[in-house]
Amino acid sequence: MKRLKSDWLHEVMPKSKETEDRPFTLGHPDYIYTQIPARDGLAHGNIERSNRHPNDTFFTNWKSTKDSISWDVEVLADGDFEVELYYTAKEQDLGSQFELRLGESYLKATITQVHDPPLVGAERDRDPRIESYTKDFIPMDLGKISLKKGRGNLVLKALKIPGEEVMDMRLLLFKRVN
Image 1 (cartoon, rainbow, N blue to C red):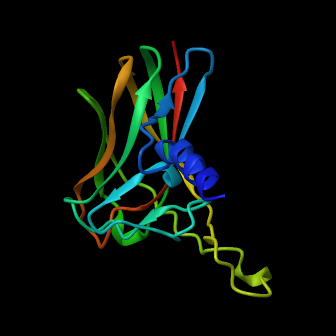
Image 2 (image 1 turned 180 degrees about the vertical axis):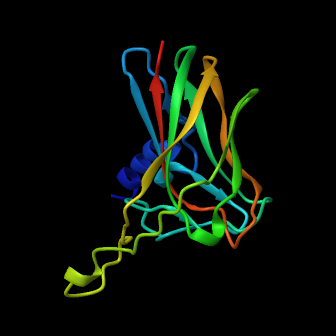
């Protein structure tokens, strides 16, 4: 049994989360849409996930221009993409500016619409859940970006925070337009 366990560990350990080197794919040439959800991103600085369990989580507590969110991505084919970001923002956070960058390609945007819905789900729970509660996120059109085939770090970074925080962020949606 010890040998079988050792053999099994030898086989599966190279495939663990800590040793696996698999980027998130973006822009498959046969598909129009690619979703880049918060659950697959990495928070840097003081940004937090809404819950330690990744499904249905979003990023919150984005209060510094030194903080960022990143995704290890591999663009599968050159292309132009329209990008939407799903977010919530309080009134005092209007005017927050941010940038989405992959290599030399980038988009800049400003929060211009308030959308501050409550968390939902707790009212129907008999016991408090361990997963994240959710809320309604709305899309913001960030514009069109040209991406080249290859691997890189997709980064969402704040440029200006006139209020308390930038936004709560749930999803990036890329739509191939060529």
